[in-house]
Length: 142
Picture 1 (tube, rainbow, N blue to C red):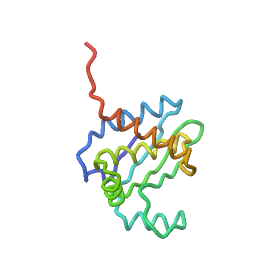
Picture 2: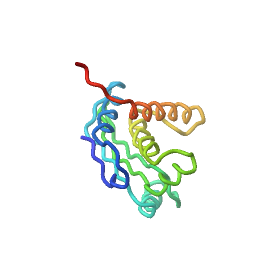
Picture 3: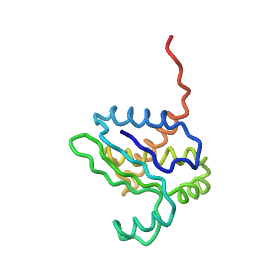
């Protein structure tokens, strides 16, 4: 089960997003038990950062990964305000930045990290692939 809460700030094809997340997960040999994406305000994000990470600032995403035995379970929090700021700063559409962060959380559950420069580069390549896949037009095989 994949659930989106608060993803009403943008018009986006949620069914397609869910399908692509499933494809990514299954393509890496995992299954999804439960993934909850929570799009929240910056104040709530700062509160979560303080409580769980000892940071006194907002981040764009926090992933609480409970994955075990290749069965993904996670709660993912995404700051709408920070997402929009990053989209502007990186000259991206809000849609692309939303897709990037949704897949960023999923990639963490698959074991991808972003602490080192090399890890960040791999993560960014995977995110870019996901954005590109989202924009591929689906055709019916007749």
